[in-house]
Amino acid sequence: MVARMKILIIEDDLEAAAYLAKAFREAGIVSDHASDGESGLFMASENSYDVLVIDRMLPRRDGLSVITELRRKDIHTPVLILSALGQVDDRVKGLRAGGDDYLPKPYAFNELLARVEVLGRRKGTPEQDMVYRVGDLELDRLSHSVRRQGKEIPLQPREFRLLEYLMKNAGQVVTRTMLLENVWDYHFDPQTNVIDVHVSRLRSKIEKDFDVPLLRTVRGAGYMIKDDRASA
Image (cartoon, rainbow, N blue to C red):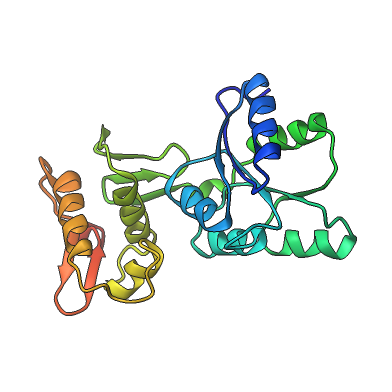
């Protein structure tokens, strides 16, 4: 058993989802539930899970599409696909879409549990990519923590995703369109100041009480996070 493991079940069959949640709870695993692909994608993007258990056939957005979009957004939470489609070609499609394991229905819960536990011990991203650093600012993607000079800085989920994307592209200008598409999932400019507000809040949190500014606005272009001392 993996202690304090937290998983997300994306399953439109409410009876099956309730059964899984109960069985996982009895095994000491905490679970959340989404009943369609769009809700599951949102929850998996906004929260930190050890494993995602995703049914392949889902309303609003199918399971493979959910996985593909998560991988596109550089979210590497291990995924176990559940599906009534159990042919070799179906399994290959699931794995190529970014799934880590594939279990055809019907299945024995003990096998499902064992597979989830194995995935829970696997890091979704190589170790060198789990921590981003810019100067004395450090973001740990595994523990969802941010520290500067060893001092922990609490961030809201959206602020964390914003900082994560900026640090992933450290030293490069990140445009508003890039942020809208990768942090807010908008493919158009909603003509609001949502980005400016979040950048301002983030800047106040990571730069307050520290001497060296890291996050800057590039007029007419976007934003950049960079430590000038590294190139001095």
